[in-house]
Length: 303
Image 1 (spheres, helix red, strand yellow):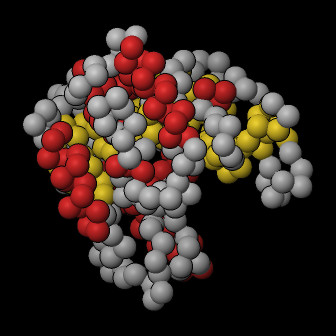
Image 2: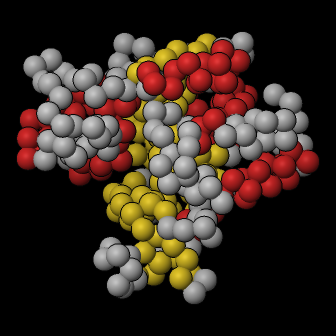
């Protein structure tokens, strides 16, 4: 059974200043998402599922979906506030999305095979799809749920244009994820990666070679049922305490499952450089990197 690639593309890039999923970066006008799909197809994936909002559907289909559907099966899932488990309604005044776990949960019924999750606006490199697809083809045996994560080297994911958020990983000697520390403000300070949790009043160092998560995960199909259960717990607890802003994040769900002893996550290290467009100034860096990879023959000029 070929795995499915689930692409989270519902977010509007507030810091970037536009719908960055549709921003051209390649030599023939390709978008980052084109390279993700190209790499997934050659790694043996059999279907693409886009998680988007209805408000961008028309542009998304015209610029991406219809063209991709000529190469691989494509389906759509719509992340909307009111898509909630039975018995729940959207709190009055709520505008904020429910988070990445909610986005993936909505794929239930559409995704019926093992799947990989990525962000639409992240360039992961071809190795990510090979190693995660390979894991799903032959997952480890055990009495725990078996997940995998692509582990990136921190220095291969940073930008000179501002701060970024990363999940800093604790990894065991045998390559299992012990937990994630979400660092929401990592940036270069005097040429070294540092993080702050007090608005820049103080900084703490990070090893430039530490492993970070870039939200590239591999899951069995039954993870979708578990995500719905987890999301319903959030609605019944923290969403009541903070109805306008509480969210359910995929990495935190995975963290909890590790802590509870019901899941084991294999960290598959990649030395590929990650590229993203957190800031508008990042676009030139991404375009230059893709141009260089194209010249080296890693990607075709036309797709």
